Image (tube, rainbow, N blue to C red; front, side):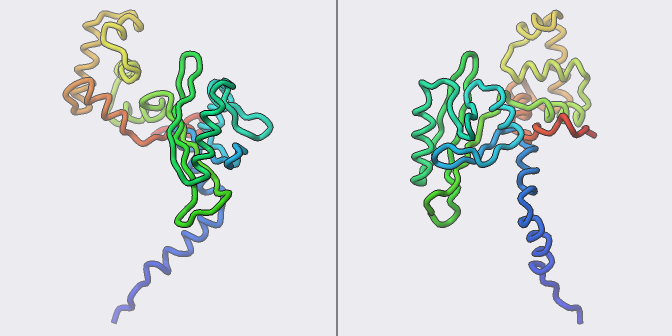
Length: 216
């Protein structure tokens, strides 16, 4: 008689080994195109993934001073402080920090688990700078057999530009851009620009590690 296999017993060592390593989740977070910060209610930075570190280095909306998060524009500091205070009481919030030429949306989420506890860390999820990161756009282009010109047109489409605007940027005829768009729709099995950009927008949010890892 065949002996029953305890699936939980098999999976447990692997799960325990992963959970025992603090670097495991950090490696996963570094692959995300979204910036993710973990902070205390006072704004002390506890962890930042690669995309978040890049955002902090830009010093456009958020800055790090003496280990604490601050808004680059002091006039918006109260927005961040209030969001952290709400998170300390268990409330989530969405805030927007504006800087010249850009806007950074941040979801502020308490990390309390199933039981509320004082002093629990707070996660700050940062918005992406574009509909799709360059890494996933490149991956998408390769998987659908797009030409370099088609990939370039798709990238600009995802930024919200029209065919005439793209033609002006690339210094080509509008008919050339529209020809690329038709080819893009054919290769990706979409029926228009809206559906095409929508398909790109829901790709997995990966991108921060593209400088190190090649695509296949």
